[in-house]
Image (tube, rainbow, N blue to C red; front, top):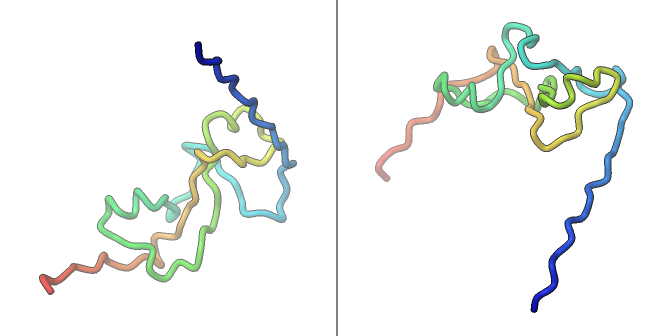
Length: 93
């Protein structure tokens, strides 16, 4: 009879929130002009001129812990809309 696998508990890495990292926003509090990659795609834009994320969209779980930085895989990265360029249209070739 096969053994039952034991789930490993994931270690909790708590990083205090500071101004040294990218600014973090909770859902619903993101300022105008910042969107995620998925929202850019829905607008028909690509990240284009963005060199990288400008801010972090905190996950739902971390919104209850304002003193800790969000380091979960479900967090989102916010990009600037004004630097985005239209999507490239592929050719048949």
